[in-house]
Image 1 (cartoon, each protein chain N blue to C red):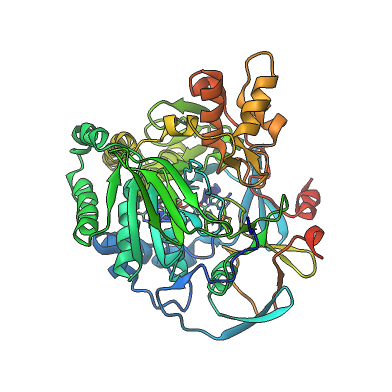
Image 2: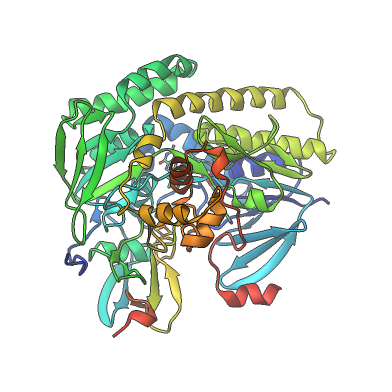
Length: 104
Length: 454
Ligand SMILES: Cc1cc2nc3c(=O)[nH]c(=O)nc-3n(C[C@H](O)[C@H](O)[C@H](O)COP(=O)(O)OP(=O)(O)OC[C@H]3O[C@@H](n4cnc5c(N)ncnc54)[C@H](O)[C@@H]3O)c2cc1C
Ligand code: FES
């Protein structure tokens, strides 16, 4: 099993969005989101997963999208955590797909 | 002036607030969300060019009317968005907003906390690309995104066909609608559904649309499994003729109806009773929504009924609260609402038979299937732990032994299936397996916030 996590986008945009560009970083790489997007939608429209599970490191991409399952947590570079499905993107967010303990 | 507090701004909470306001009071409306509407009447996030009325079709009128009514009172009520209620004790609500904790007392509390999807695990269900059926709708309505390019709609729910229709309408490729309830069981449930012909016809219209578009619509499927290494590549199943089928796809929307969010109700003192039809523990209320002194439940958080029942039961609970506080006479309006809520919820009882929770299929899951996606506990872990116990095993004991249901979703996702695995493996009735007890905080919060308050 690869379990590396897919680089291909999971979400496909169906309806256009208007709004300013919002710069973020993910694992140190600069990425662009659009104002109004959730962190989850912004990340999954550019890649295949959000985070790695603490147990075994398998990729996860959220599940309920309504703030109930807590499967979509991403970490901030400063060690805080965000629930990606209910958090709108904000300029300067510095995000990480691995829990602090799993980072190289 | 008495504090009437409403939690939740879906159709039930919005309408409860409108009724309280119409009687000259200023309700406090608390919600975790950032936009009014809850799940069913959700508004698109800012900047999204989504034509929601067109997407909602026959339901658009009600959606627009409720939002207009709410906009008209919004500035006249104490509306607190982005605020989580994480505990209720001694008639005090514990709140958290942007990391800041506070408390709120109440004279009457109306809980309109809604529902979430009920999920039965299948092999591969933790792969990226598998989302709840409700989540597939949220992706579209909130974010204007499909959960994938080629989507399979799987489980057992009338909303499979509805969501598939919304996806097709906006251009997604729907590869299959696969429902685990046999067609015969659906036909058998028809008499109990005929009381609400409009809703029934709407459901049939969605299915008809799928058929005409050439989407395979399968009933009575078994042996569901999702294939893939690090993301979904296909769904496999046996159709009702026991033939193996495989549908290539990159996303799966999975759902078996809804289950009420009862955590706050339980903390506030409501009694939970096992319902044989839904095979869920549901809060006990009277016909008006009363669940205890000064405690009222409305909407899908009380009993699954859909958006119409939520709207009506929100008004009903508000009327009951106002009457109990001596602010209004119980009148004909209440009786009318009570009848309407009763009829709409009876329809859901019929739906629960036509779209059944797959008890046998859950019992037949292989040991290797993940049951708890938070703590990575498998079905086999639970069965083995039960085998080690000498006496009868109840669900909270299994939770303590395996950590299943102890993770950050607090058993919201695995709870109903854990219940079936425990009951099935012990050979006892669903109710005898016991109920996962709620624990505050009802959702994970930063520890500093909990410390600050206690
Ligand atoms: C994910 C999902 C998607 C759905 N999509 C549709 C759809 O597209 N069409 C449809 O007809 N039906 C849909 N439904 C069905 C839906 O349950 C009902 O139609 C309707 O929305 C129920 O209304 P309600 O007012 O009871 O609850 P909801 O509309 O679910 O509202 C619940 C409210 O309670 C708040 N809340 C809950 N817990 C807390 C807490 N601890 N602290 C603070 N606030 C809290 C939430 O923020 C929310 O505002 C969906 C259900 C789900 C779960
Ligand atoms: S996806 Fe379930 S909480 Fe975010």
